Length: 220
Ligand SMILES: C[S@@+](CC[C@H](N)C(=O)[O-])C[C@H]1O[C@@H](n2cnc3c(N)ncnc32)[C@H](O)[C@@H]1O
Image (cartoon, rainbow, N blue to C red; front, side):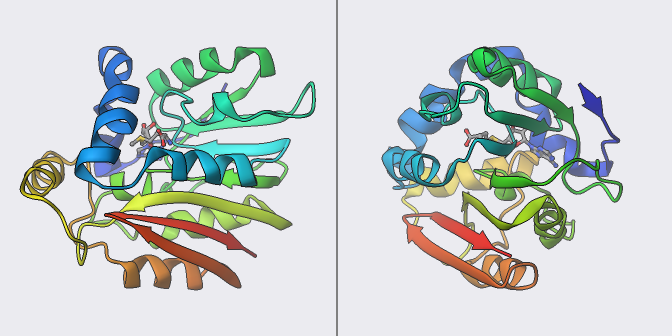
């Protein structure tokens, strides 16, 4: 496993993923929250992965490997690299797709020093942007990701917006609590700020809103 430095207050957005929390994660996030809080059907996120994941893939913000383990790789040995700030998620996601022998990189996507490695044909950055602290220059994450993407590669994922989206009272309360605890840093994120971050780093991009989520794809 490669290890690079973690940084300041970015830790809070990753620290919540303890081994116990990860046992409940798929049910709470992709079973309950997507449906009842964020109104973004999990199938839409699966569809993004099915469409764009390549056999030379970087997964940033590994979580439990929930989406990746359902991608039907046509190659026996795809190159899959998992990157995360939290060793628990790297371990859990690696176990979920152990048959592909993924590599793990412990890294804060906002750290100024990013690991160097051969570029990828696809990068997933799903449900991570909203975890980055509001106090940081979050657009920097896309700058780092674009450097890891091949010229013809694709970046894809989704992020929950904290501003300018309709939220039911429970969703509003959960979003507020997560922002207070530093689990999310998205209270100021709206479609325009996501668009600005993508436009600054990619020549072409697409954003589609599903409830509180913005699904994006971007090309260099
Ligand atoms: C909400 S989970 C999303 C997991 C997975 N992508 C999914 O869609 O289920 C956020 C993930 O991003 C990771 N993460 C949070 N902040 C990070 C950072 N600054 N750099 C790298 N990974 C980070 C967390 O540890 C966690 O694995």
